[in-house]
Length: 114
Image (tube, rainbow, N blue to C red):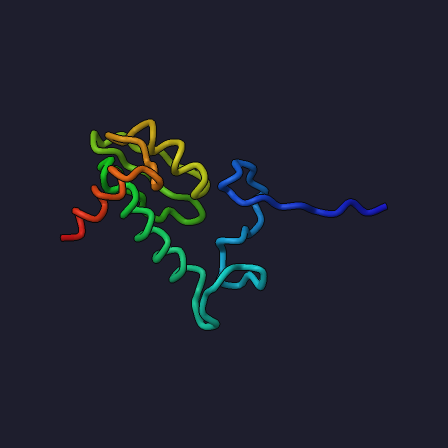
């Protein structure tokens, strides 16, 4: 009997190492996306969006091959495996936790746009 492979997204904290629902380029089961979008292009867009969320805590991520580099406001740096790990580590090294459901947090993001 062949066992069925099950994947969970990073938001659940269980990482399988295979593409998850957020990976659109080259993933027929991914959400949205454009036919001609490359994995690298998609990754750069994702990094830009994540950096907006990390902004209030003065942390920032950058691309590092298959991994991400997370840098805090004091210069402390962590290499993380995936987006799911970014949130955990950003809460440790940023000036404030990342909470996209907190109204005050959302107001900080909105005010940083102007």
